[in-house]
Length: 110
Length: 114
Image (cartoon, rainbow over all chains, first blue to last red):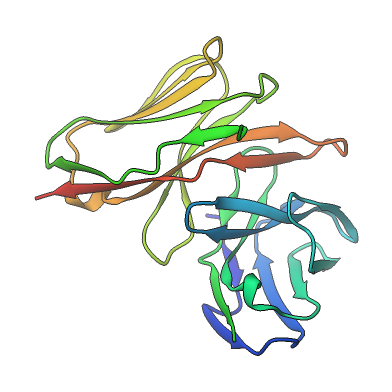
């Protein structure tokens, strides 16, 4: 089975901090995704990557950046955390077909 | 109008009932259709994955796609308390880079009462 591992389950950060969320997949998938999930809004795509060093903006990229230096690792960066970035962040990977998700990181910005 | 519409529920049913979950969509270019189950404080897990119109069955779960009506359904037979979760529909959209990205419904919260 594909395994997608997110480094932290829970994080609390202060406003203005730079935050790194890490994601690693173990099945050599080309595509990786970062979503955030909020009540009533569902899953919204922040960024995705279809190859090493390649990235595309999703639907809500503002305030975020990403890094993919190795195929198995995809990092989400909050340049200057704000309270409206408090959310559940989900990483996923895919080859062709559906996404396989990690367990999520619940980020609280205070 | 959202690209994918899904009733948020909550939907409460007695154990053993047949559950019907539905999504409508507006983009006729969507090619793949998926249903995910998400337990509280967990990531979504894939339940069903279909491409064409028609039905696909897997155990107690049946996924139905009607491309002409832009309507997909998930049926759960003999529902169990362990089926209590949020169910998300998702559809694939091909990007300019040739990658599939996925558009999700907001999810329907299901509670199966023992």
